[in-house]
Length: 259
Image (cartoon, rainbow, N blue to C red; front, side, top):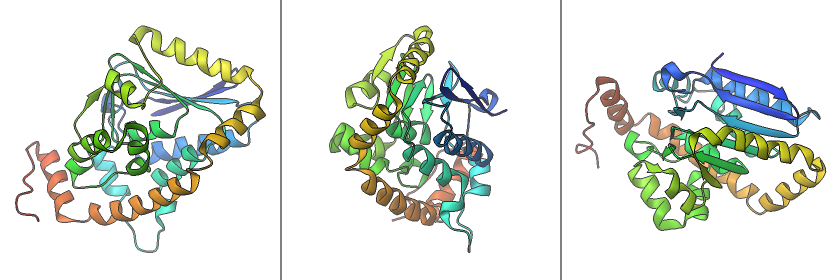
């Protein structure tokens, strides 16, 4: 299974399990995660959610080959029907507390999904990046809204415009992660924190989370809708074609011909 989901002791664990492809995410994987999150909403035995990857890699982001096949806009098919959008909606709308444990690279949506989690813990080998502009695309998952709120506009602009990788300590300083830990301590600590959430009154946790997010819920929905519309259009544009072609040909893209 490329996504492993387990429920134990009140915690739904969602684990990226495709290390041979650096945990790159396919449409099927997005659907699996979306279904697990939706099911957790109505499952009273689930009181917290933990998202994790492998010690050496969280996720390389989208599997580009699968992404090109399954994520292009299709006439007559609403964007909301795509698995990636279902996952975004399910995670951003989760009423239950979500813990993330990140080690290794977290690329693209591997970083932006963290902005929708409640407790984010990073190993000291974690590396984050959002290379959307490098691929001729734009931010997604409301990161154009949430990252400036977390880190301030100048730092958010640096990360989203240049798309360059940054390390766990900088992510902590930006407010993207709650704590940085040695790799060997990451999972035990994240699991302990999830267990603390399970032991607390579920209604209190849900209400507190809802209150903290209430002023941004509509704005997040609006940002995701705007981003997805532009993302879909840019995916069909010449710049993205050049970026993806260069990636598959293992060469540096040349954007000089585009204005």
